[in-house]
Length: 259
Image (cartoon, rainbow, N blue to C red; front, side, top):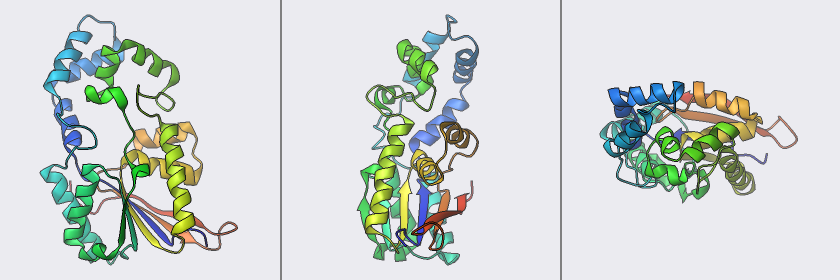
């Protein structure tokens, strides 16, 4: 069989950006901005609100350097402990996105599941988060599109699947580099148990490439079944399927930690 015997995909634990999104959702000014953005983007209130909210909710670090929260640390520890206690087979190979939140997630997983330390470990750029380019300066794509109206118009024209952030990536770009990583799995890690600590769009891209999902199916998953923090997706190699076996989805987005 050309595939790994098992592939575990784990989304990073709660990050400072995830926490920022919750704070924005609790902000009455942001809720007003969202309402106007959806119903009347030309309203005179919209641009001043966007400018104020950009300053109020600045993250203060790059996407690559965004850390876990204290809650995220607890999530990662609990996930490692419960997976170990459940008798999950320890991977032989671990890929980890080089972003700080994924590296920290793996570190805290290891503290409760020390057997992970015996696996070969690789920092893998191809499973990093989608590059949001210029939008990273705004920490919110809606604020970005109000303050950069031509980009908002382009997004409206192309749609969320094909739109590429200025100096960044779109979803097809993520799927293409994900395909390159999948090729490495088949070429170098056939017959191995593999784990990847990664990001929500990488997990969706892996599903989309394995299952040949359409853009509409991808966006439906992203809207209605988005991978959760520390959610575990599990593929198992089936030697009798296809010409040389295939990876079959057994679990998707399973949580081993509490909210």
